[in-house]
Amino acid sequence: MPANLTPQYLAAEERFKSATTAQEKVEALREMLATIPKHKGTEKLQADLKRRLARLNAEMGRKHGVSKASAIYTVRREGAAQVALVGAPNVGKSSLLARLTHATPEIGDYPFTTRLPQPGMMPFEDIQIQLVDLPPVAQEFYEPWMGNIVRSADLALLVVDLGSDDLLDEVEDVLRILEGSRIRLVGDAVEEPSAEEPGAASRGTLLIANKADRDPAEINLRILREFYEPRFTIHPVSSSDGSGLEALPRILFDRLALVRVYTKAPGKKVDLSTPPYVLRGGCTVLDIARAVHREFEHSLKFARVWSSHRSRRSVRFDGQMVERHHRLEDGDVVELHV
Ligand SMILES: Nc1nc2c(ncn2[C@@H]2O[C@H](COP(=O)(O)OP(=O)(O)O)[C@@H](O)[C@H]2O)c(=O)[nH]1
Ligand SMILES: [Mg+2]
Image (tube, rainbow, N blue to C red; front, side):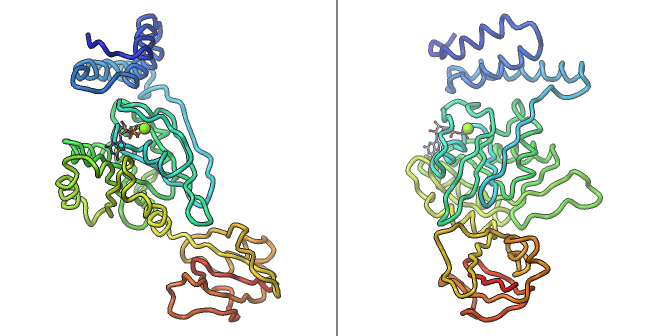
């Protein structure tokens, strides 16, 4: 028996021994897996726990006609967009959440530290983007609610560990398990589910190659690029030394194609200290009118637009009158005339 089992593990083991129902046993086994120290000395024990858990889950499935009795967790949307962190155990999802937001998730060098969805707000300039940390996408732990969060998110970050010896297998496992729930992680713009496949979803995804500080990150990054580019855009980062993290909020913002619109009253200066309206790429003057007031959709006569100094558009607007289907750009100031 390995000597360094934690008190939490031993307590869970006690609960397992005294459990009377299958559900109690499953919960205790999960707790044991979550708290077992992850190293060579416990590998056999970990495998044994996973086997028992799989067997129990299968038995419960036969009895109840469903795979397992599972809780449902959802995360209330906040901020400009919702981004789900997905990946194999121990790749550093929770560390990433901790570095990018003010959330303080549990981080540990054992595989199942995170068991509930954990949201955090990532600031980007004058807005906030919600990140949702999830338990690992792994056969023993995967539950349908995790898939639902990935489905309803605006973007997924597929986090991988550049120091792992099984990098490609880990990525493939995650993709396969999600596809089992009819969720396809895709690199490009989000496709809507097709008519033939009700319930299927594609989720736009960025591949975050974490632990760039570890060996053999350089070789693994090259392999990863060979296999997954151009399907996914790959961003190497390190949650330990912080490399690559500073650029991430901007990368996420651009990938989400969000448009910040500031409104001002005629004859007044724009107040940039109040948060902007955040709309989707392709939005028009009509969309912002609707967002400001439901009635404005009908009463809007025209609008004036000022481009931001950040604008990359060739034609700059400096208070010109535009019609209601005029497309807005990030940073635009709009004066609505109703
Ligand atoms: N070297 C290195 N270790 C990391 C990095 N990010 C996370 N870790 C470590 O990897 C382990 C798992 O991290 P955690 O965030 O709990 O992973 P999760 O299971 O994916 O949420 C912890 O021991 C972290 O300290 C990184 O960028 N570099
Ligand atoms: Mg975690």
